[in-house]
Image 1 (cartoon, rainbow, N blue to C red):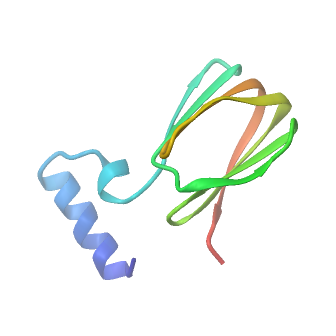
Image 2 (tube, one colour):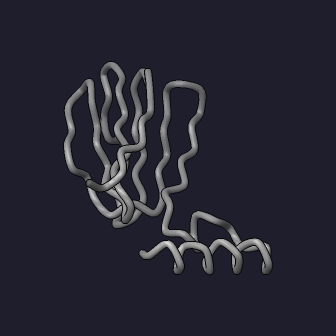
Length: 94
């Protein structure tokens, strides 16, 4: 998405009071304490281990670091993780 398209989508989202995650193709991440992690609007699982999970979205990746991580549910654009979550990092596309 070009900068111009991004600016137009941001403006439309604000003007019509629409959710940014939908308009800008961003992941929606919900945590329940540090034991559950729910991700919507992703495009796939890139890497999985019990200490690190990487999830692709249209503009980059989400890197999750933790302990005893596991996938409780995985659908086309939704993912529910469980385990002891330590950190979340957003990695832009190179």
